[in-house]
Image (cartoon, rainbow, N blue to C red; front, top):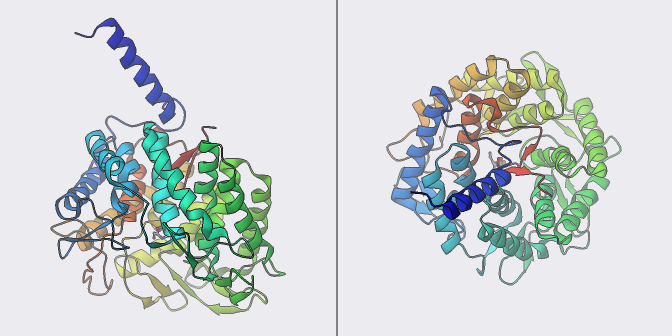
Length: 455
Ligand code: DMJ
């Protein structure tokens, strides 16, 4: 029997959890999410169970060799940290508790390893922050603060734009030639860390980095592919929206939305105008975005791939439904042309350029945003195609595997942590009740970790 004091305590915990979840406002966990969401959830559990069986405590599962892989020789618990908030959103509470216990007890950033600032920020810092916001587990915030502090030396370049790599123990940096995505995809995580800890240094460093980058845009408003963070000189002036630049644009928009920062609003609006003016291409095969020279706007190539397919989501979040819909239609054409999505193809010929499929989420993420804002069933129908191809070609007897080539569907021994953080999360959300996430209040980081303005 529940005593009065226990009942008060239980109610207090429940109210506390609800306010952290923002249950009445921004995130609601569905008890019965519907049959297709349940199917996605069971594919998630299938993959997570394979991780538990063959890679527990390591960064990632190797699904074909049924073994594990640690990015830097020691585990930074990439998969559990990346997957934690997906479990919470899916209502997999026991699994989430076990993952959180594993992280709380074992994850240590006191390691003499040189890590990629960008990857560790979007996967680990983002995952720890969203995990903290969803559960109130203070250990996750402590870990985030420790990690953020260890990453800060990355910004100690003459320009303030971060080096690519930083040693977590010594702070030694390396990798002076970086790219807009790695320089400009830090504000959501570092900014949230500042807001939650009261230390402005994280926000300020990440904002300076993106501001320095933006200030080096060309006269026509574009950025290039690679830049030297010590000299501030462009190394490669090819402009595009694919990997290496992609999430720079995403974070201009989302940093404005999450923090209400007017400087970011201006940077986003100027940048997206330039991208739409110089990269958008109404070709015979559809509406696409090309590669052009950042200074002249001269077209360099007509390649488009799975990473580019993030852009409809960003356009939709910004309210540009027309371009978002057209580009998602093109990306869907790419998926169906090859039976599953290739890393890259040439849209002028619809021929393969890079044939692998790395279990990437972007086209699914875009379908989710479009479904959320338009309520058009077309995007759930697309999602059925995505789920069908994934199950048919990528499912193994121990988790899911990337494909070496979409031509023969031969599999590769890799299940990146973003498959659980992003790919299956967005698929689930496409079918779960709309209220599961209030997209007007929640901002997903580029690894699909939901962040909320709780400050
Ligand atoms: C993820 O780590 C993130 O979405 C990143 O922005 C791009 N690459 C992968 C997924 O493809």
